[in-house]
Length: 215
Image 1 (cartoon, rainbow, N blue to C red):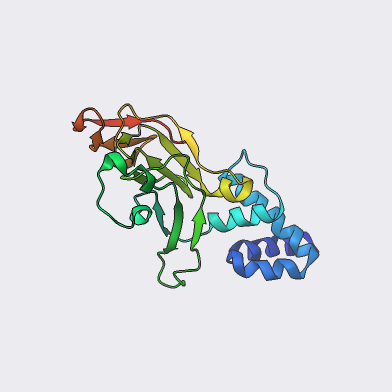
Image 2: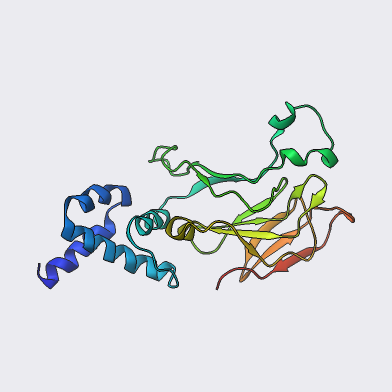
């Protein structure tokens, strides 16, 4: 294969949707090597510190090219006590660590195509705030509660690292206040949080900024 032909093949592979490219990749040993090298180059731009190979690299690339998705993280599940009324001081068993992709948000794809379970969080979190990071495929879970215990901790999930290195949620710098039912958003190089309820101070008015985003 000439240099021009190889360059053209790389461009074709780059433009193929990931799942359409997989059977083509399997059909040719030469194209497989070419697809893997192309994936490696693309992922190196997204995550320079990673060293992924083979199937994990392709799964990570699929995440990098995934459409916008609806994600559900944490919350409260009353199945544990058959939906009977209970005070917060006794409902810790219902606070969730689970996370999942519910569906794709693009109208031209089947909503169930991207549906999957994500790694569980490190801590149970009801009334948690969740934001999408400034880099593609990153999620943050902030605060929340486990029974009456409010969290100041923050967790981060990188979907590329999850598929490429089997890396789950990672702890980030904590907030200054423990909060549940808070609001959160990305601002510049950090996460801004506001409001919520504290275990000791009741409803909170102050806002805070925690710098825990990758630059």
